[in-house]
Image 1 (cartoon, one colour):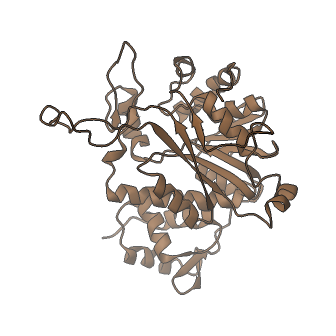
Image 2 (spheres, rainbow, N blue to C red):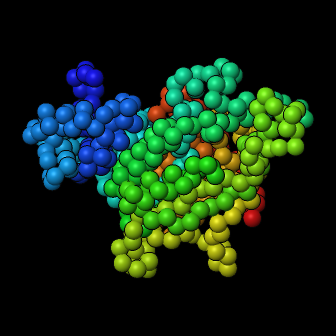
Image 3 (cartoon, one colour):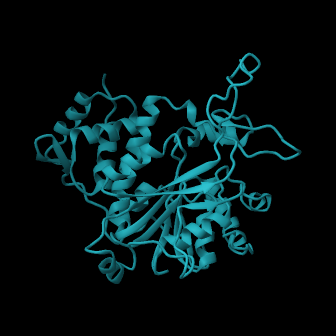
Length: 372
């Protein structure tokens, strides 16, 4: 099969630029397939050979890096913030591009809820969601007079789409590893079906798994009877009703011991909520309140009562910058403002970015009682 000029070359350039180094033919193929679809290894190899030397350079047998293409400037940033409030800055940009241009070792922690389903956040499915038509989004019926928030149907993902998730997080991990300081914490929202893919991909990019935070909350995922056979099998649930949400915890490797890393980089552990109480890996939480949803009608909005605890813990000495590369409505930035931290958010979707410009101040100013 023939491809138009640049169809294969450009994703290779983007990937090698993102990781700031060389990569194997296998990893390059995975990155290209994430962008283009089912491309043969021979087509990728042909594109590499056609543009080597020049665009690409061979570093070893089956390994390549960028050649004469200029790398992003170390201190460049992706435009100017579109919004500032308190100590928070919001950028309207693709986080992969923004992270490629960010100065290395300039972020101290990451707290984010990424589009780990990928499929539900493409343009077609977002349009269906906003029109109330569902698509891969599950639009629950009203219950007890309350309209439930839509949720993505993660069970519709096939093996190819799960593989795309792995490639997505591996590429994301490479970018993140460069900009984080040693010992920097990463907390990524996930779900019981996909958390293992996130962990495996991020560790392959150089991170250490440090456990998980369990957000105890009832959701609308799972518990359903077999579709179109609910009467026949009325006593069967296809899968358990989800009553918790896992947040994968990772860390960039330390420089020396924890105390050495804390002295040099101000991170390497988790901040205690009180001197006599360590940060725990189970946080009781309620669904996001109607008041918060009225401020920011984002389908994945997390409650401030939960986010403020997690963000507070992410900087062990309360020093540094917290990043949310998938900022959505800006809830993580608002939580950082509320606990007195500097933060940066990146949001690619224009509608969500505009929502965040309106929501960050209002979410920051919400008065909440510590639920612990």
